[in-house]
Image (cartoon, helix red, strand yellow):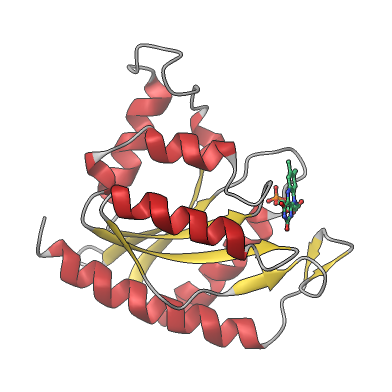
Length: 182
Ligand SMILES: Cc1cc2nc3c(=O)[nH]c(=O)nc-3n(C[C@H](O)[C@H](O)[C@H](O)COP(=O)(O)O)c2cc1C
């Protein structure tokens, strides 16, 4: 990690056994690392063993560690998969389990699903507004039919590489601007 650079978390939105999100997150990180304009890291919700909101007193080590991680980040790329036309319960719970640590930061969305995960991504945009996260416009949408083999092996089409770069341009400029507010 380089001091003085922005810290951008690439947050995997799914936690199920057999998920494809790590492939997508690693791909975004590879593109991002070539830019060398920020410290990029994949943040896996599954690593935090987060309890469902309200089922504990909130002092669990996982919730504390999650809030610490989000506080440390200046911006986010959400890897979003469509579950029943929305985001996963795991991502919604992880969003609900922090509050101020999300505020006044920027985010991009990379989504996938049968229609590119567009419905889930639009739901996420509504939630991000409430958390004072500024979501950027460029939004790479990956198709389960054409960007994955057998819905499981990620083989992204060429155009998505350019889109991820354009999305990151916006995340970096807004993350940098919003840092001055905090
Ligand atoms: C509970 C559930 C609901 C789903 N609903 C949708 C849906 O509404 N629209 C869609 O495009 N794909 C839907 N899918 C397919 C997922 O987008 C696909 O399985 C994707 O790989 C899930 O991401 P993951 O592998 O990272 O968990 C659903 C999958 C699951 C497990």
